[in-house]
Length: 116
Image (cartoon, rainbow, N blue to C red):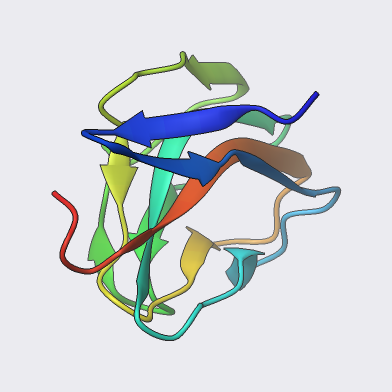
């Protein structure tokens, strides 16, 4: 059964993405889609070595959530309105200021620019 994310009268497929290894610098969690925003519904980041980890819109872009500066599992639970979203046509990026051991996974929906 396909999960749907509903905004007003429109429904969008809920998708999942994960990266098994976070490295120093930019790591794409969700690739950019032309004309669409990536609306994050839930997010989990697991970090076993300390470093500043930032979830961003685009590579080197605006931070979407508070910077994580600790080790552990950080779970941002499902939010019907969305936790955050990228700029139109931008990828969802996880950036680390140093080489770390960690993973990230999220559920998201691709929504048109006109949808708020």
